[in-house]
Length: 231
Image (cartoon, rainbow, N blue to C red; front, side, top):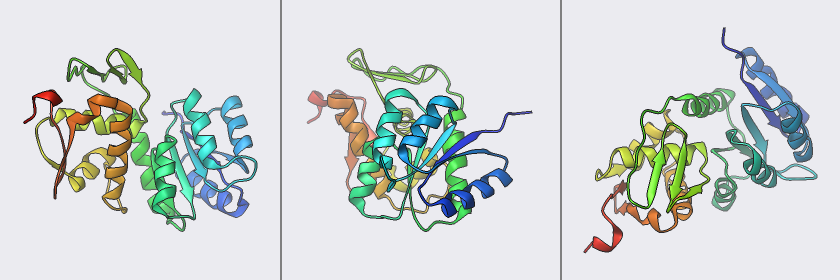
């Protein structure tokens, strides 16, 4: 029998934590609770978790800073929870390494769908190794990306997005198609999520990020041709 996945819920609102905890426990998950950012990091150190749900507004240390510190030490997926739905907050969440961003209020069914989708992406078995370009190497077995020989730290979602684009090199992919195949569920947000992840991915890939082309009115494609050879 597969061991239950552990989810760490960090939120200073006790009622919110308990609602999420009770629902996830019914669904078969083990749940740890933290009332602030420092406690969340302490629990990660002592107990560990398979996924983190981080509220943004917490005392002592906010969710953004917790996410940044988690990313320095662990590869666990992170979903940010916030009552603030502004675009700048969402961009900041993705910039610190979050895999998903959910604005409150949300339904527990939607939250569960996001959790299960992130965990499925994490558990999905890679096949083979892709060496896309001379300066860009993507090792799907080891889940390692290198640019000019130097490793690049990508989140789970960024890695899945990159490998999906490469596996469809030269094909113009709509934002909806990318959402369906990378996020792997009926995403209830908007295409801005894809744009945000593409922007962050390009930044991390430095010059190699220019191979991810914007197709006006459609979406994106990965062009394997060297940038300097484009007309």
